[in-house]
Image: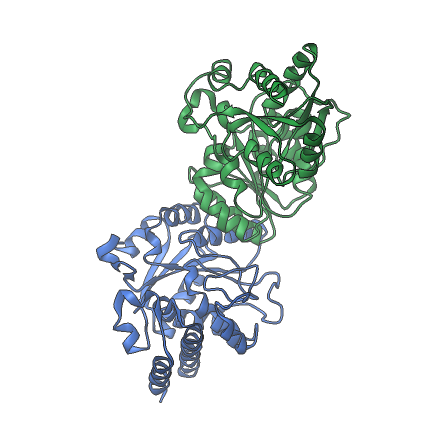
Length: 310
Length: 278
């Protein structure tokens, strides 16, 4: 049984904090919800809980960073991004503060917290702010390698991540590289470019497509910004059609980022799988996946259409 | 504070005011009212209180200043130039293309600026973060923040204030520039603070209200704050006049928040400030 991603986050933050005493956790009453309770015991002197005050969380972190610390702020994605957008833009990105942001429960993974907590816009909003890296892990192995990597670079980073266990896409041979697209399967007929919880769906879809005689190239975009444009252009040149799959509004997110690269460099049609600019709602994952079309079946459908219309 | 020190600081405050007037005059316009209202506290900080080294702006253990009302950058720039962080000639570049002296404070550009600020209500959170980090590191430095009265209408100011007292940040000294004016009118007309002393007391600060143009009173208030090792952050409410020191600017009222200054007005303003000196 795969581990919850929050457990992977906690274990690897623990390793980082053991090695680097500048790293501190700054939370807003969701430190435990985000699975970081063990860190409170292990590093009590490096935990700052500002209470339910996310704006202050971001500002305090920027101040701490200016003093030389590396704060990790964390909350649900909704409150770690859209709620504090101006603090991220000014006190963190504009000021070039070395703050790492963890936003959990992005998109439909907010599940029973419902529409108020669903971020279908966090990538779109943050992507247009200069000086921030945006990451989304697809499984435990990737998150495990991602956590130490964000402390290797100086400057703002946002990780949007599911809290629970996900199907394994990678094994321990995987070599995560910040900023580099991860080609999970090569193919010649269509490129499926996906991120986060949609990566395992893309892998599943590619298997099904293969049985139907369509060879899809599956690309995992763990680094949404800066986007690995070269890998995307190369794949488009090979396959001539793209499907994007994301747990986010199809406006402004991965599809938007891919489209920006493709229109400028090698125009091919892009078929989006993702939230079609509609509001979130309450439910469990199986229902929400169907409701918002975030399934391998939708990817298969889009890929078949893409190939047919080439 | 002895008479000599007092005269010295009053002279520095006048020099700051004159440099601000010249810089904003060169730029054509700027946030003149709120720059002049805090000249005295900035003089006390930079020429009496702060443990800083203009030759080593990033000195470890230095006291830090966060201009939460970030639009008062020109006052800090004047003080930094006078203190020797950079040449006074640089002040002429205020708001010019590719300047290191933008209207609002930018720590990535300006020597001696400890925190970027401009979007109101954020700087005080950053000051709390710096003070918290200093506590965590066992540092002995003081963190000073200058907060606007209109700025205090931002909710995040109160989030930061709650955190400052909860974290027992007695290394944090906040000044409220209580000039009682903002862009759309008086603070009382727009959204009253009612009683800032009572408010910050209720938020767990030790709070004192002084004449914000009396350098001796400001110095005494800082000394009072530092004397008490009570685990409480300090709020010093500075009763100030927006545009202080130049009568025609003061007379503008709320519209002196941002105003243009032509050469004649600059000359008249400098003359008035100099005249006061005699």
